[in-house]
Amino acid sequence: MAQREIPGRYGVIEQTTSNTDVELACESVHHLGYGIVDGGYTPAWLASLSDAFERARERYHFEQGGGESLRAIDEHYTIRLPLAFEPEFLELAANGKILDICSRLIPGYVVLNQQNGIINPPRSERYNQGAWHRDLPYQHFVSSRPLAINALFCLDAFTIENGATKVLPASHRQEAFPSDDFVGTHAATVTAPAGCFIVLDCMMFHSGGVNTTATARRAVNHVYSIPLIRQQIDLPRALGENFATDGKLRRLLGYDVRTPGSVAEYLAARNAMP
Image (cartoon, rainbow, N blue to C red):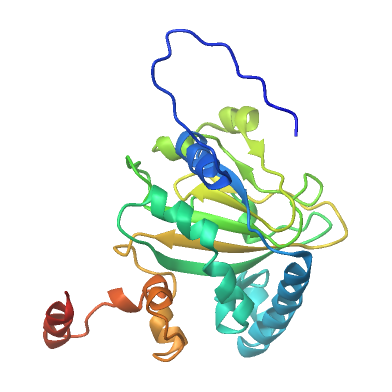
């Protein structure tokens, strides 16, 4: 590998040090609001996840009344909580690099706020992720540290042709959505190989691009948030008490921060604290 030339500088007495892909991704998220990190998966595992994605999609459509019922509410290109259907998605949500990034960027600990399979349809068809948004929508504030991290897994390669994600760099530091002229000038397209995560501060404005190819582009989106933020779906309730036995995994899924249903439950939880 060719050694990168060190840029000249003067008057610099402090510098950030980032030596690993995780550290580089964290630095990029801090400054720009987004970064890319390879998930570390083999081609065989990606093929297995691809099969699991299609099984989850078929089962999800069946359980939710079919594709037309989902189309009527603009949910036909989303698979909500696929980890409830296929074990590969639970493994994906617990990716070590992503949890390391979250632990570096968010104080304390994080819970999995949501996991969704995302399909960017072919032939320039519109889909609901194609509009600019934050993954903490309807919020117009900024914080000194991230409140939530978005980890968008590229099951298929993200290319300009198949509608790779667009971002507004550093918009996680601005309260209001910028002007249309600014968006047209400064929006950037984030391309990435299959098997990578595109990591965003959840206050970064982003959108799906237009897929002009003949093949759908698939991804799995994760949001990891501080426990104070309500999960998109109550995962412990949806998954059941016996879904996971590992303590760290249960903590990630939110089993330790459920809302007490009564004063007695609240006091019992307080009593169980170390």
